[in-house]
Image 1 (tube, chains in turn orange, cyan):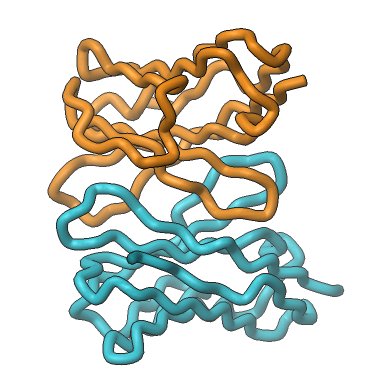
Image 2 (spheres, rainbow over the protein chains, first blue to last red; image 1 turned 135 degrees about the vertical axis):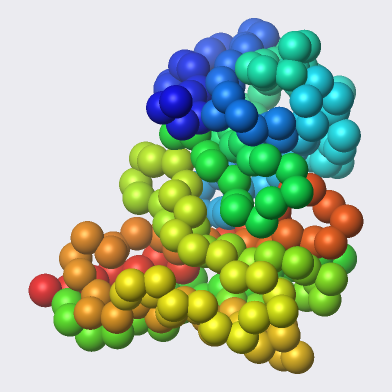
Length: 114
Length: 111
């Protein structure tokens, strides 16, 4: 297992377009998290899954954002009708529920909306 | 609500010790974490401490937790230029699955 993988690493899109990001967690981890990080800020929680169930969504996750984890393995995060304010690093992390071992983060997808 | 505060910058000389401080608000936090982020990279877990512990040492890293004051610190002994990065403190609440991060402390190590 090579850790948490995110694809793509970078995405440049025009305002109004839809984008989709993918995250492949560590295979034995049952929890998967999405965070957003803007310049000079710490990561902000967006949503998380335990297996295929989406257990919590932040108020930051507007109606234009949707996340799925259909088979409890990889996850996708889609942003519809992108806005310039969506430009950020989108980080995915995974963990094993019931342990305090912390989350393993991927390298992130940097989104630039022009 | 939950909040994690950190000073934004710290500058030290190579070979000195660095101490990065953090305060948090959620008294039900079960675990507290320190992450390191280098430019353009994701977050790397450095160490964590369970809330019933006062101290944890891991090689050059020492974490001190004052639960009464809700204060967490990370000490890096013999700081090296490779330690230059942004360090994030994070808490995990008792009932929540997600981590709440501070804004990060940028550590600059001068030769």
